[in-house]
Length: 226
Length: 226
DNA sequence: TTCGAAACATGATGGCCGTCATATTTAAAA
DNA sequence: TTTTAAATATGACGGCCATCATGTTTCGAA
Image (cartoon, rainbow over all chains, first blue to last red; front, side, top):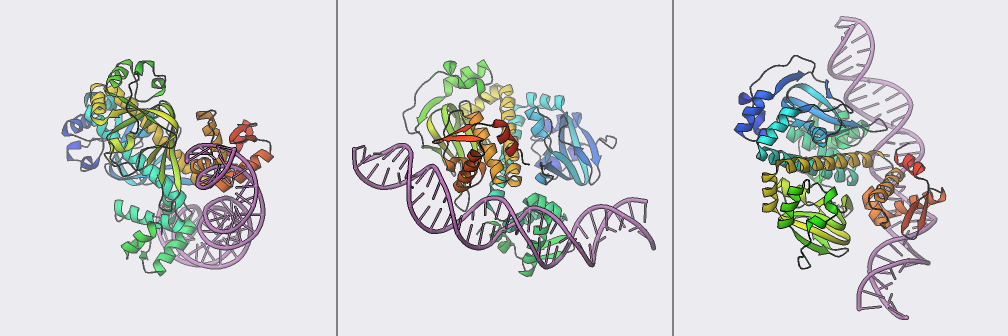
């Protein structure tokens, strides 16, 4: 934690409505009393692979990227989390050191819930545990689906899919070619060429670093693999 | 279920010691009373994508493959489960239809626990829920790691990794080139050529369909990417 | 035991796309 | 404002490996 902890109230937090953690008013009340809020500037690291998880992070506002660095130096984005997203739960529950790096993409406010207090919440609220488990299962689905997609689809299809996903989930966010590449499992050069091609076909418009989708249906068709 | 349900006792079941489901003697006792055992012959389908999960399967003996068919007709093996493994939990907990097919690779005995009874177990035994959650998190790790591996590594490296993994986890099991290919994310032809190459280098020996690893260290080096 | 499908085996071909190189533009920091 | 690193942009090259084709062998089922 790089900035002094602050105290915001869960009661006025919008993100709770979409968070797997804040499943009921009762749970929110408890979490409100045990959480610590903290702030990260764009680019700052929240945790790194190898460290031991001591608690769990919930995104209040901002954007967090979970990425791994593979042996050959390439970085891959595993998950991208906006308000309501939970970060660092996998390693915590698996009782392992972190296997990925969590990085704030933009200025981000997080809630930190210490391990001990979190497990107490689960012990007192079994339904919260099941609710969280459902969320984990969806993440597992997401991972397995993206895995298969990236194996089977061509780069242009993955890039089409990427800009659709990023657009839908993080409206108005600007992405570098590198970030899109790490999300789509390819290189910045290939993203470049593909986006240029999409633009030539009249499917998108590139206003600086912002991508405007002109023909959503066509992009979806491209993303769907033939 | 294709064969009449049988009743085996959990008390004499060896698989329980390695199962995420059977976390304590108390839980085992309850599961023993609510489970139904059933048998699948090699090649038989346990469930298919699109169906609604009504319960959960635990492998008592045998081998089960979880695979998805991607849009272009290719099949990918997501997970492989021996005794103690749990199948069908992801869709069940996510409240979704199955996204993958579960197939018995060899003659397999399964325990089936109906949805309602399973959730009752979790309600009565919070610690069993957390234990199961840990197992799911490990599966998530496995999926994300394999995903990155398959993106970054060359076919020969993935094949080296595959034969090590399959050998270590399912000793004495024989694998077809196709099964190895679907596990490693490549084609039977590439598996062929690569195994022939490994054999020429004296790293393995192919006695019919059984692969004998002669130089484990060398294979591990190959699997590790450069 | 016979038969047919599936698995094994190997060669030839071609295209996708990662890599490297280089120039320009943007944006952030000093 | 100046400076400098990062991002954008484009071209050339080449290798990995999927695909197709064809023949042989194995193995399970009738």
